[in-house]
Length: 117
Image (tube, rainbow, N blue to C red):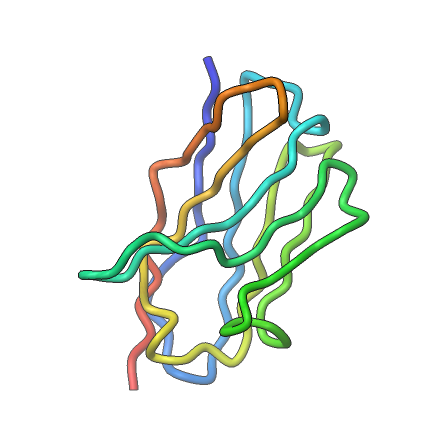
């Protein structure tokens, strides 16, 4: 079955960095556009970054542009999110998301990122 397993979250000081990973299985990873979403307490889930199936196009939420970088390794079926210059407002649960035009969407279980002052 389809599995998306996030890892790499944790507690970090403001200004620090984290790298999230999402290990995918059960589907043809290289055919799916992939995204990272996040949800902070009391807020709606929001799109953070998206990358096309072969990684040729990426896009970011304005709030993370210049600080976050999404990438993928199709040989390893893994999605990444490099997060630099972290701010308190980046505190959230981060989710991996997979979608292809012909398929339903898939979500990971999420990984907690907490940025402290």
